[in-house]
Image 1 (cartoon, rainbow, N blue to C red):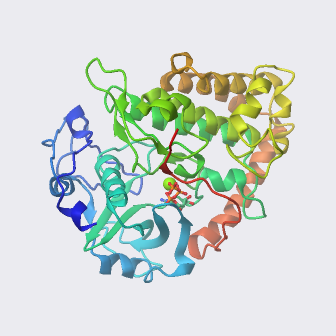
Image 2 (image 1 turned 120 degrees about the horizontal axis):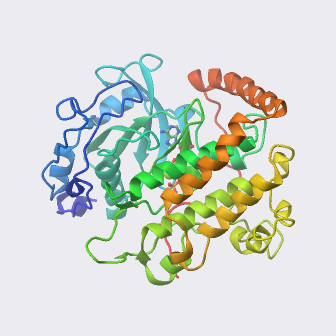
Length: 411
Ligand SMILES: Nc1ncnc2c1ncn2[C@@H]1O[C@H](COP(=O)(O)OP(=O)(O)OP(=O)(O)O)[C@@H](O)[C@H]1O
Ligand SMILES: [Mg+2]
């Protein structure tokens, strides 16, 4: 870690794209009031070269370790919101206006991620998160509020997403997590697609590289936002078709050509989006060795069924029965299949995905049957119940299944 600290880490930065940093406002604070008073005024900070410059030029709040300790009740185990490859995520509290750490239980709730990994890789990912997420502001990207860099300690403070990850809602069983309804799945897919489309847009040109259900977080209204930019990369510039990278990501989500060659394009993210869409349709994990042989890899198993209107029911989550029409299901299955094309050129871009999902969502929301409305209100009741739990003392739910997490992947 010491070596990393003094290293001049290349800023794989959105700064040089001319991206304007606008206030996120999702928690109601303007972190960047010094340079974003006019949304239309493009303020382009100097391209930072070292991590010191990156941190100085960000609009994020810099916390001491003592402050984040105080905000999280000394990282108490019962404040744990989740665990990932990076470390644990704790619930904490800050003052809404000053963003200073407050007494737990007062002010607003945040999520504090604490790096528990040694070495350069962990530090690099931490810095990439600060560098990307600290500059972006979009309704479908989680807002990064601040960071802590003290000795070997690396932490990040995010807006709190009360309903946790899509992964929990899709794959955890038990009374705490009710199965997501068809219309909520469509909404979450559309929100996440908008987040990716923003990253891929000419304005930002970023490849996310770690699109998966655990990185899609849900707010109290089920608005979905992407988190975790530790593996994000600037897209190719000039006439280059791809960026060459060490193959990193999560098994089951990475595009085949990326696994084989390390060549990364925005279409690699589109493939991962297709995997997530398939997981949402089927309620099954992308990789699960506990399934019967021939079904371990969801994409390989499901692909032949997706292309046939009469066979798609073999893939669809049985908990969704009665909530969709065959036409709707077939359109989503076709979209998933296109995103999962082995040849990247046949995959749609994320703008097309957004348009397709928007077209599907309209009839679903407007012409929803009474049954759907009833189902939705049933959802809302159970959410309200869970919300009070979330707001005070979220029960700790142990992870009882194999979870995929981001790591180097080798072909
Ligand atoms: N801002 C947040 N608000 C609420 N819960 C969060 C927040 N960020 C993370 N979590 C919870 O903590 C869990 C762990 O998150 P983390 O990003 O560290 O790991 P992961 O995405 O599960 O795996 P990986 O390390 O492969 O990215 C998430 O799955 C989610 O349940
Ligand atoms: Mg994550």
